[in-house]
Amino acid sequence: MQLKTESMTLNMGPQHPSTHGVLRLELEIEGELVLNVIPHLGYLHRCFEKHAEAMQYNQVVPYTDRLDYLASIGNNFGYAITVEKLLGIKVPERVEYIRVIMAELQRIASHQVALGSNGADLGAFTPFLYLFRDREHILSIIEETCGARMLYNYIWVGGLSHDVHPDFVFKTKEFVEYYKPMIVELDNLLSYNKIFIERTANVGILPLDTAINFGASGPTLRGSGIKFDLRRDDPYSIYDRFDYDIPFGQGLQGTVGDCWDRYYVRVREMEQSLKIIEQAIDQIPEGDVKSAIPKRIKPPKGTAYARVENPRGELGYFIISDGNTNPFRVKVRAPSFVNLEVLGELCKGNLVSDVVAILGSIDIVLGEVDR
Amino acid sequence: MKNPEEIFNLLKEKFGDSILGIDKDTPTEAIISINPGQIHRVSKFLRENEELKFDSLMCLSGVDDANGEKIKEEDGSEIIKGGTLSVYYHLHSVDLKHKITLKVSTPREDPKVESVENIWKSANWHEREAFDLVGIVFLNHPDLRRILMPYDWDEFTEEISRHPLRKDYKNPEFYQGMKVPY
Image (cartoon, rainbow over all chains, first blue to last red; front, side):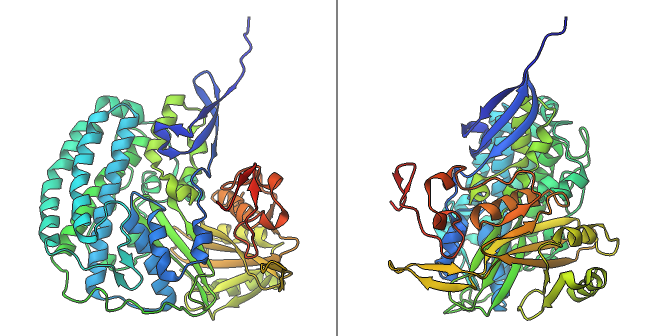
């Protein structure tokens, strides 16, 4: 006799530790099998774009910190570049170098949270503590310079809010030396852990053409096996001066584009960031970091779209200027917002417990999803 | 790799009057204006043409141009009548590494634009966002609901407070019995 089955709806979130913030996923399940996922967003919506219209250009910078609060430097960076493009100004060399070093330090710190929480979601709590211990080093380096540990307001239009602390170069070098063996330790502890591989390899496979069509970017796109990085493919600032590799998914433990690949791309990216920092730290020229900051920002009429490679992917700012001191329209193309869209596609046909692994491997920050 | 002008000429040849013009005066990027009823056809061409291959939609933004007639209300606030709402499409080719910006404008009183969701999937949420915050209706969109604002925002508020990113938006006084400007 055939028994009749019926699908049921399960709400995951908004308060659920593995949704990384206030995200509600409406799962349609049949037993353990996920048939459909409908994300409901907006719990953190705070009208960033509307606020920005009421602010002067330089006043928007602290608000950008709060978009992707794990990678605030990157958000400042993207905004500053877009407004500079609109104004047509060039910033001093010293500023460029410090910006790049800060952004790469931030990328490592952000990936540490991503990798740690991905592991913690799947039950590996120890690597999480190891990664947070090392993240502390980066946060204290940045704190010494700009006084904050999370929301920095550091990169301003045309310059920086402060010059770096006198100890900055020394401490950064010390960190680079310290952290290299720690990545090996992380590999042994989590990346090649049998249980972790079982949970992530061959799970949530994202084919390359789907990834591009869904607009995925960052490690989520590269995990699908393409060497596409805006630092190299649409160079901004001074990234074209450094020698580094772009890690991409190769299906070492399973299929190209599975959760493990996305995880592993992040691990290898931390290495490459260290490599960039190593090259840049010795070349910082002397100079004044505030010399190019405009007294009054009043761009000509027009539009500008600029994008930077944030830890989570392509962060784009689209700014329309009507010739006033306030932006007419600021639109943020947040990487997490676009990457999250692919979740529904990835989860279909997987088990409920895999949803956690997939969401962790996409690595979203709700602050920029909801803006 | 093609520059915006070559792409414009290519489109003009293929679609004629549906391509309204190219705006090169903007300091940073050239923008090609397109008839809102033809955007789906043009997008399909841009994606499938071998020389263009725009396989990725970077960003889609709804914008209130605020270029209509501004009428002052008694309480000092402004209402905008007439004019246009616009949608900007930032396209990019992963293969060929070129970029282009498209723009369609639609009348403010009846804003309708064809959806490009079945060409680039990433348009789905971006279009929902533009519908939610600016109030542009995307025809043939499979799932046109609000995305950032509450789903029931319409039921409790007046027409002027439906879409927050419109320039004449006014905060509603109450939402579900809660005072809004707190």
